Length: 219
Image 1 (cartoon, one colour):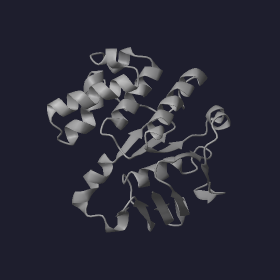
Image 2: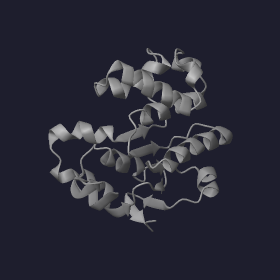
Image 3: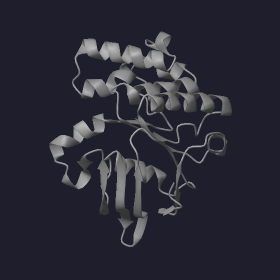
Image 4: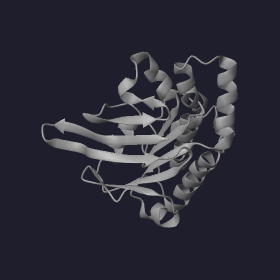
């Protein structure tokens, strides 16, 4: 379960990236987060991922209430979340395997566990044969699938996707969408930020719509 309770993010006095946002999502749900460019979609995902702190209000994920979260618990919280970025944010000085393994290395996983998890994640996204390749040598769609593998390699409960199809053509966008749907079918809660009309018109999932930092017609 994800709950935003009257959450605001003020970036200058009287100027809000998000203002008085309230909604709740059930565990295992798939939700589109929509709105124009600059509406606050990325800010909302950053708050959810604990990459930023709200100015007002509170956020809850499962039994974790953010305002009560102790500093030592934050890394454990982030390990429950996977994030897929529009621009991949891959490390081009490392091969595909090492890119996918990165969250596990930070999390101090044992090497044998890392090897098993990375291999499984790459197989899931159809890139098992690309483990030793450099990300720059792969197509945009393949790079985005690497990003998805990295996001799910620690088996998160929540997957946040920030415009993951924004730079891809329609066919590859549909492939990325199908991958995210597969993870959702396994019980992962997915929040997918997008203004891609092709995706929104094809898939009939609940929507949260932002307009100038405010929620419009939640769900």
